[in-house]
Image (tube, rainbow, N blue to C red; front, side, top):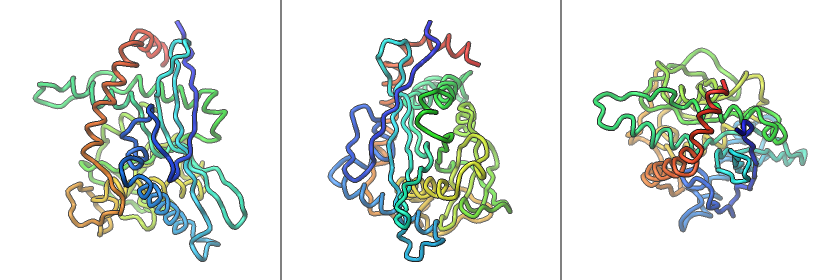
Amino acid sequence: MNNHFTFTINSICLDENYYPSDKTRITTNFANLARGSHRQANLRNALKMIDNSFNALAHWDNPKADRYTVELEIISVHMDVDGSGQTFPSIEILKTNIVDSKTNKRIEGIVGNNFSSYVRDYDFSVLLAEHNKGQAKFSIPDNFGELHGKLFQYFVNSDAYKQNFNKPPVICLSVSDNKTYHRTENQHPVLGVEYQPNESSLTEQYFQKMGLQVRYFMPPNSVAPLAFYFFGDLLNDYTHLELISTISTMGTFQKIYRPEIYNANAVAGKCYQPNLKNLDHSLTQIVYDRAERSQLANEQGKFAAEHFIKPYQTVLEQWSANHL
C-alpha cells in the first residue's frame, strides 16, 4: 500500500483578468466573484478595497495611504493517492504578497487566508447531513473530520509545502452567528482587540483536528471580530505587514459576503452576537449570489464522495488508522 501521498502545487494570479478553472471549487470566495457579467468590475473593486484597507492599517511612513499594493495568488493543491499520476484537487488557499512602492520591494505575505476543500464539503454537506437524516436531535458522527484533519497536517508537513512556503498557514474566517463573543483587555497593534467565544463551535472543533488553534480579534477600522486559525504563536511568528495582508484580504471578502456582520453600521460591543439578519448594514458595490453558493457546496460534497472518498476508501481508511 502507498503510504506516501504526493502533492503538486499550482499557483495562478488573482487579478481582474482571473477566470476560474474547471477544477476550482466554484463556491470559493474569489471564484464566486469572477463569474457573471460583473466579473471584472467585481475583481477590480475587491482588489482596490484590499489595497485601501492594507494602507489604512499600515499607516506608518505612509502619509498618502498609497504606499502598498497587495498581490494575491490562488494556490491549488492536487493530491496523488496511489502513485498512479491521477490527482484529486484537494485544497485551495490564497497567498498574499506585498509590493512596497517606496522601496520597490516585493515582500512575501501569508499563505492560507481563504480555505477551501472538497473533503470538507463532503464532511459537512454529505456525511453530516446523512448522519442526521430523520434524527430528532442533531449529532456529529464518530471520527468526524479526522481524515480531513490528518490530510491537511500531512500536507503542511510535506516537502511540497516546505519548498514553496516559508511559514505555516494562517486561515481567517468569519465568526459564528450562533455564538456570543466577549471583548477582553488584550489588544494588539495590528490584530486589534481580542474577543473570546462563550463556547466552542463545530468549525473550531473541525479546524482543531487540522492541528489549528483559534483566536478572535477585531482589527482597527473593523466592526466585528475575525477568527484566525493558526499553528504556533500568531502574535509573534508573523510580522505586522504579514498580518495586515491577511486582515485586509479576508476583511474585504467578509464585507462582501457577510455585510450584515462585517459591513454593519455599528461596531461590535463588549458582548457581541453576530446577526446575519441585521438590517443596519451597508452593501458593497460587488455582486454576489449567496443562495447559489450554499447549493453548490452540496454538489461539491457529492463530487468528493464520487471521485475521492468512494474510489480510495480502503486506502484512506488504512492510512488514517496508521497515521496518528
